[in-house]
Amino acid sequence: MPAHHQKYFVVEGNIGSGKSTFLKVINTFLNAQVVYEPHTKWQNVAGENLLERFYADTGRWAYTFQTYAFITRILERERAALSNMHPFQILERSVFSDRYCFAQNCFELGLMTALEWKLYQEWFAWLVDQYMVKPSGFIYLQTDPKICYKRLLKRNRPEELSVTLEYLQQLHDKHEKWLIHKDGVVEYIRETPVLVIPCDAEFETDRDMQKAHMSKIIDFLEVQYEIPGALSARIEMLV
Ligand code: TTP
Ligand code: MG
Image (cartoon, rainbow, N blue to C red; front, side):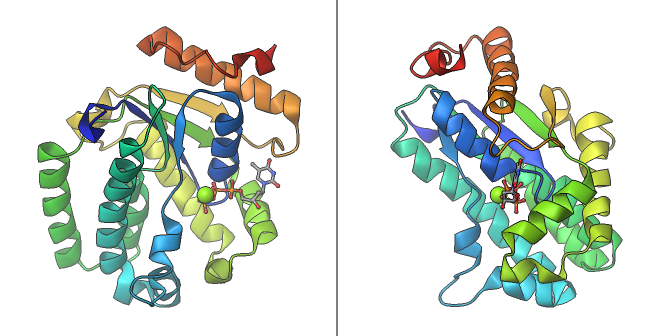
């Protein structure tokens, strides 16, 4: 099916909130194609580690990083769509979290200049309006920043050593502002439904918790969007 015809949902949440772990659970239980965040691409751009540069000197690289994150997210979804045998896709983050959480935060902290922020917003608005397929819904993993921080330390990615609890708190506030309060969000996605899943409790190793999360997702997908086949295939594992 062509990429622009495919329905997709987005799992959103702070750094370390549990998105990748959540997508693995979806992959086990549901008939959906999961598309992970393309961070390995950011770690090797013609031999350079852009993610590392971004964290090492955010003021210098924020704008550059955001442009590359935008394009790689779109290409990753389209590439995956070409081989998708499932009725829909579920993505890890989107250009919208880039815009409303990460880029916005960089600007507010003075890590993007007013000029860079203006340029970013101009091309973002145009590309989103002219070219993007709208997400059918957001699945927001709402996790206490202190718990995100613990999970981050556990994962121990070298590029993320400079990430502080304070930074995670700022990003958390941005997610809440965007997905819960819909504050300052463009018309384009203001009406897009949001399913909130509290994710403070451990679920990486807790099968019952995983099933409880999946039941919520299934209700969200099937009741609201009537996606045929969403329940099929692996649903028997839920009972
Ligand atoms: P990830 O699922 O990797 O977090 P994320 O995908 O939201 O992060 P990013 O924004 O960078 O993409 O979880 C982070 C770490 O926490 C990982 O090592 C797994 C661990 N973890 C647990 O130990 N228990 C849990 O219940 C969850 C959700 C994650
Ligand atoms: Mg992840």
